[in-house]
Length: 323
Ligand SMILES: Cc1ncc(COP(=O)(O)O)c(C=O)c1O
Image (cartoon, rainbow, N blue to C red; front, side):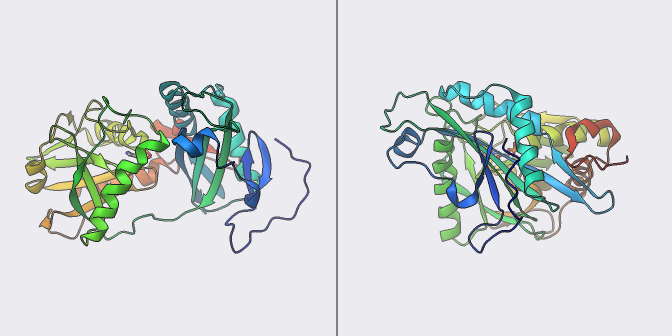
């Protein structure tokens, strides 16, 4: 990464941060451009990651959450959609953290790594040249704290026979976008999608869990879901910190209507409770239920490195952490 550019830190009205990263080099926010005839622009060929970092005032430290696991999934995404791109998880992780430091960010962040195919005259079977952009931008609570009223979408979640739902291919996101637009049009805050065979899959950018008859349940990774890193974190926290066995099993739509608790989870969404499904109230219809609240709390501790067992999930970005 270029570090010899001694330009003052600032952002403009149109750019929330000064720098982005392009193939490991710092660039000005406004200079991140691609040709309209590139493969990615013409055919939606691209993969990405979205991750978080959390600022702790108490520690004077910024903690980046499960960066290497995200980079591992980025490589997996490239493999599945056949993009010949960078392959070193450590190099990619260091580049992202270097970008955060270059922007001197000390706030809760959302970070992205995006790999595009940038050939000048894009063909559908191009697998390169790959080009990598990274961003780190301040972001607080994405959904607020009041919970989500969700609609079961009339759009089915894309299936593994059509597209690869388990990875973060940019083209997949048209599916969740349509569901979200439909939900908003109908006066809901968020959408959940069913599989082609009518089982609960996930939402537009988050996995889903329910508590029913005292059991915590979530769809298995073969139910057209993205293999979420927050989902995996929740599964581990539920088992080790709360002693809960989680049922990984197909979930019917009508089970959601009679669930005691429902929550969604994702890097941007964090752990966020659902207050209603198709206007059927969940729990008391406003507050998070007891298991959801405990998992929300554990997750917020884990992302700040406060749970010793999961300390290796976080990287102290500035190296100031004393714990
Ligand atoms: C479709 C979809 N499902 C689930 C998730 C949650 O995944 P993660 O927890 O890895 O962010 C995301 C967000 O990245 C997503 O886009």
